Length: 194
Image (tube, rainbow, N blue to C red; front, side, top):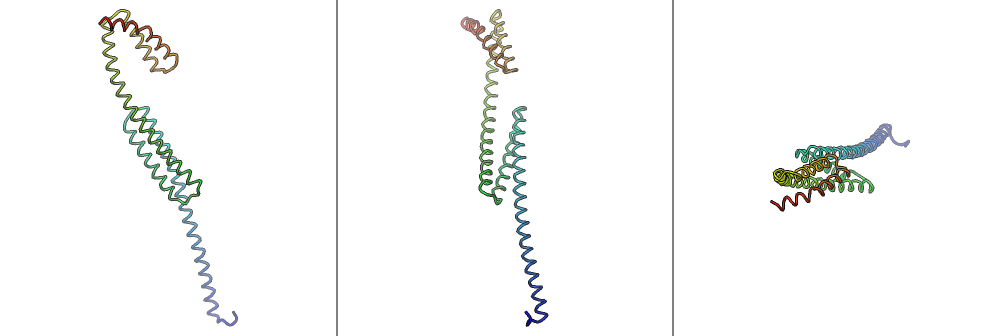
């Protein structure tokens, strides 16, 4: 080092300083990139939670209100959840985290399938209820025309049915079965005499 000139010593010191600055900048850049990836993963995990809760809320609204627009809202929330899962899959995760992401994805697909089945079943029930209501109205009109004890017992059966549908308790179901047991022979006799 003693044989090197002053200018070379100064230039070498600056070169070493620049090399150290470049290493620090590279380490900082890698650290920022990892932080960005981690934050993106955390944001996706938060979005998964929000989308999951939103789909459940819209499902509840559909069940309570029956408005078909809630079906689209559930589908949109499920799609957002899928998008968040895709972003999370792209993040650098360890094996246990990847397994958790896959279980979230599978649960989301199962939920979507179950909700679709529920919507189809609710539609089938509504169609069947409308058909049964029409048939029930016709039978009720015929029984009322028959009059007497048949009409009275049939009315008691209807009341027991309404109370059961309102409360859905075992006691109300038993009352309905009891009323049906008493009304059935009278309705059978009336039907045979028609």
